[in-house]
Image (tube, rainbow, N blue to C red):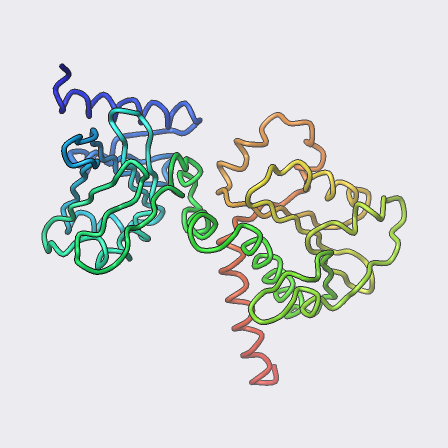
Length: 312
């Protein structure tokens, strides 16, 4: 029979190996290594907790010291990996989200005692409340990108299509604030209280020389100045980036700024596209993280409002 500690240590080591197999650089955090905390790609902190299945209680049991959990949740891009020692599966949960649920998951002041059943529901140990469904975080290795906040929104709070529409709406509003004409092909999705069609200022695109207009009309967001496409954006949060690059590539003969928005940080994005056949397009294509688009949108609207108020 394998000793519990040996089993858990083996499961932890296998999980670290899998992170490396996924293409990530993984190093033990020298400051708090005794808590099994790792730095991934120098941008993400990962805390690894392991547990075998307790047959008598019918749960995986995990413990988190409160003050360590609280401090860890404040780190940017922090992820807690609950590794199931008997199956080698993992539940990767953004630590900030987990900390926000603290009043629901344990009444213990010093120690968070977490019980997860085989359907990956986190049992609520207080008398009120429902179990938290952690199945959406099963094997979510994409959370190891620096865009953990956006990935969380995609996984937990809204359908991916809603997030796609939100980024489109932000790009449209930012373009409007800067004085551009704006276009998007899918006018029905909503951002805030408006449809994207109501935010965009141009209903249809003019013909552009030397391009396939049908393909260009499918680009997620286009900004225009005097009917010329100055910037084109593809938002690729859940799907592969290649269809978006094909659409952007139709504008490569024009002096149009090409942009692609993903959930990845710059390093992860460049790793994904290394050596691909779209080298000519990628040389001109600017990458932005979805979180950066959100920050830019907020800043731009504040500046626009201030300019209007001061008549400057």
